[in-house]
Length: 410
Image (cartoon, rainbow, N blue to C red; front, side, top):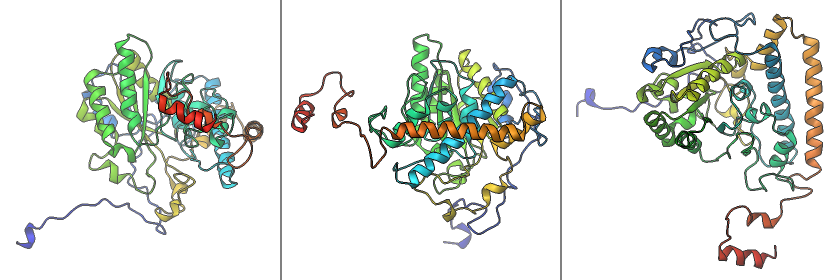
């Protein structure tokens, strides 16, 4: 065979490795306020460019500018800052608890707080999220008790899930938070199915599916887009692009599409990219997509451009696959600091007030932790009863399980 005819395989590689100088020059960031805000009933073909840009509201000076600004009141913005600060404080305490052996596992949200906290405020009671393991902000911003979250993390006697789920895999129907699946990608097609069922019943509730950039390589991601497009399901399909899967950079899953949002084009789904570290932009885009679903105009695919500052989980060491200082030069900054600076610019906040609020939130989180630990932790205190293995699964318990329960004496 002639040398010129030999084939070669392309294997994407990250621009930098551990020990190299971090480089985000490839991330093209448009000027805040420069991206159009189309009507919710726009033909997806008319906004193809939004899948390649980044919708931003907060500029470098902390001002909210452009057509996507103004979807929240001052009080709602301050509440949003508190939600993100609460999630960050919660994360820090639970990360430490894992290192102390009080729980077996934890996953932080550092740098991604705006995505779930802002999105939650665009929903209505009864809407259902099908989340991944990094959307606890949906619960924090939705008023779910932190004590209950901690009970689940500790798998103690008050764990609402009776020790049946891995720590941080929460579930609350009342708060629109479907049970988290450890199998990557399954929740995306489940969200579409739930939304289709809502439409079949002529209900008013919509669904939101969540997936990470790495998990878009799963087949369920593509199946979800097929069904959502074909049946115009009332669903918002969210891709959180935090640049890294557990040890693989985004280029492996993204392939040659350029952006994750662009994958919506092949299915006729309107696709947008948004600055995931801009609370105001996230809320504005979420509100647009939710309104589209609510008006029976079909699905929307949203890519949140953000960065995972911490490890993938307490079982991961990111220094093995990316530069240690990479998060320091992420060009879209810190979502908490950016919203704080915006409020200071508006004269609604101050550094002193921020420090005071941090202290107050930390006190609240510590109080919740003490309350949860009264019910036990991983290696001490109360545990779920063995009988809970048999309860709440079948309406009528099968004979073989009844015999097992009797043999166990529970």
